[in-house]
Image (cartoon, rainbow, N blue to C red; front, side, top):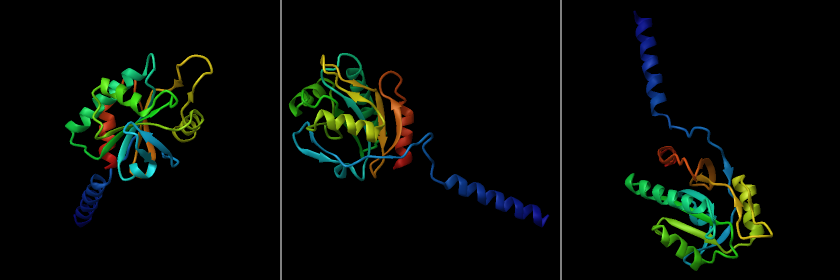
Length: 192
């Protein structure tokens, strides 16, 4: 009888500890982002250190994109609204332009305004070279960005990237057609 009671006590204690443990992000990665310096749509400087301490979600877009960028930006607007509904105030959204020679701060502002972007928590970045963004995307985000010599359409993937408070990418999601909003929000809550 005493042994059974002791066993039950240990089992209950173990279950309580397990329940109190921090949840983890399923299929997480841990890709540190190198420091960068860019120019925001407000024509101000922004670097990785300015985002430290915040969870953020990022994407690669460009304003003259003929196909995937408008839906991706619209999907990020939906995510921004859902974050507000969930009262997740410390989450930032960051869009890197993959066509920085065209996407000036003014052009990015006009583009974002078409979608009703709230700039209080969302920053659009430019102000670096084409070579920089192609290498930065490849080395840090494990994705392709390539501007062909002919035409104005930049090749890039359509992922959203969840970044933790230390500047490490934790997970990627479809940012184009089947955006898993609930999963993204749950993963953000896990990081906070």
